[in-house]
Image (cartoon, rainbow, N blue to C red; front, top):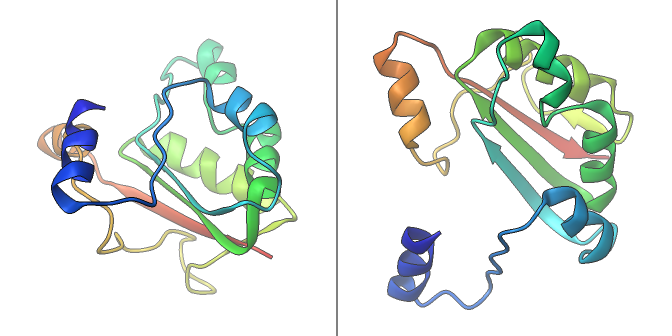
Length: 141
């Protein structure tokens, strides 16, 4: 968070809000529906063990909550270096009727890394371990 605040100051940004709080509570109590232009979730914890999958952030109820808070045309961008989680995220997002995949029709459902997505320390670690990286970009219909 400190590095982000430093960048905000260096670039003189004035149209940014930074919250360090539970995302569900922020959506439920601090933001109105149809109020967000976009949401980025990069490298959420994949909770590798099957018995822990229920702890994964990307679940149908949370995705529906996110979709309702996006403006029409707003986007949800997810990235992960854990392939099984990437496929679960694709399945969950594809099942949400408020969202539409921006990937090429007939393709894998994933998009190439957008130029605006920074290289994170988690991505760097995954690449060093030989993991691929999967990006998903869905738009609110």
